Image (cartoon, rainbow, N blue to C red):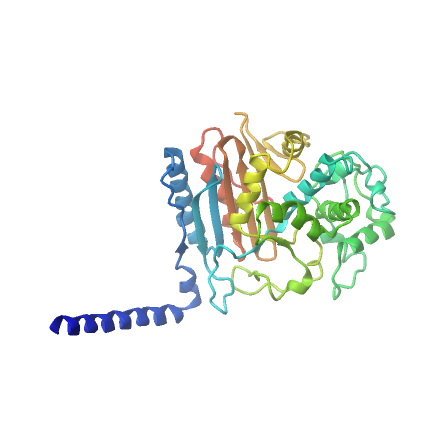
Length: 390
């Protein structure tokens, strides 16, 4: 009887303790709440010594760089299709206090370009278009006959960036501009915009990828969203990936400035192809694995995508077809893309020679995310890499 009484006393005491802790967490100041991590790390008994070293490097970057910069987002590092390190930290919404988790889809910003480029390359692989076809073949009225699809993919078109010219051309900023509007503005203002000479130099430009998304739709006879769903997302089981439309605004993950102020919608938010794909770290790991294992593309297609096209300047940095490149003197290569839109910062870095992917997605502006390639320093031949190229 005495033992039973003691059991009930201990049960009540522990219940009260857990209740108090839970109430305490619920009433923490927002800034302190954000510092409480929710760790979900793979525990695979088949880890090799290099896997453990990669995990340690990832943990160090997370602790010493991301957490110290008030990180709000997700990180996943994978090797050979196996999760080495994974962490979801912070809040989906700073007002509701709902935590970020493994099915939280982030705006990929310019990492979206990797999907747009590979959609075009899939159409090329299937003989539905040629990379050196003029854009005029697919987009009626396009006023620059010397610009090719390859020029758009490699950012060598010379076109001006719609992010900067739309408003200057008199667009009413109370209305969303879409991809077709951008094409029409190019047509209507051809004499004013005066692009550079095609294929003369590299000039990163969002207009290229807004037009490429239109070409995907023209050739496939599907919406851009439907094409990606049917060709990439569904076959790969990327169940939390999708193309954003403005009617989803209240349903998707919001983004924030560094001071927790929510980023408002604005007139450029409806354009897709250059941005506006949402995904999760685990879905992006599937994307990396598919690219690594030839699940979706022929080897010749991947070679076209991952070789450099711009050697006007000396150095290791280059751009392929939808992919930024670091081409090391050692022969190793980092194939990657960063992104930034509103409060979203993203990194998707692939080290094919070492079968490693580094994925960091955040929805509160944070430049420290762009230092994620430092994790790769454990492998020989890369050095210490970081940048803030969007």
